[in-house]
Amino acid sequence: MADRHLIDVHVLLVQHDRILLTQRRDIDHPAFDGHWHLPSGKLDAGESALEAAAREAEEEVGVLIDPADLVHVHTIHVNGSGPEPRLGLFFATERWAGEPTNREPEKCSAVGWFPLDNLPERLIDYPASGINAYRNPESFSVKGWRTQNARTTV
Image (tube, rainbow, N blue to C red; front, side, top):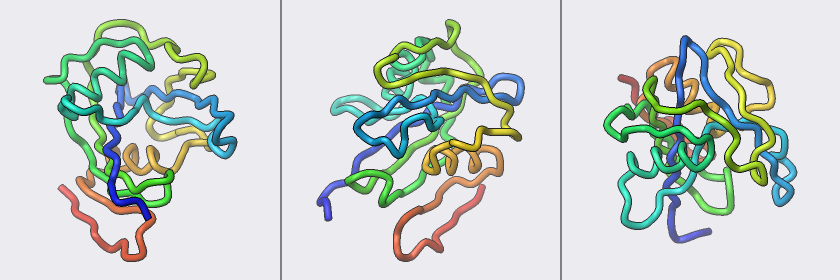
């Protein structure tokens, strides 16, 4: 068992009840290849979670976000979504500059808008949890742990 937890940041770009998703291109983890995900990444040393979320959105889909425009919508403590447990922070915004495009074609095969009430079937479970918590306000959840009855709603 790993002795640390990674911190992931996820960005929900929301426009007219639609959300932007990216389709993974993942030869290292074929189980995720072709599945949809949110723009996301790991928190780097020396940056705040809001700065990391804005950075990841720019790196992955080319939009500029003022970190002050990001609203925390969910935190999930996940085990089993990768080699190490992780804490996922989900931030939503309806404000950004630029048109989303695929800025990482080596990691992403497509970018698309989806209605919040009609998400693609091949959506990775981890980001799906954050999207569902955004739709049905839930501030915290756990996933993949033996005891999963910790739930807090707003």
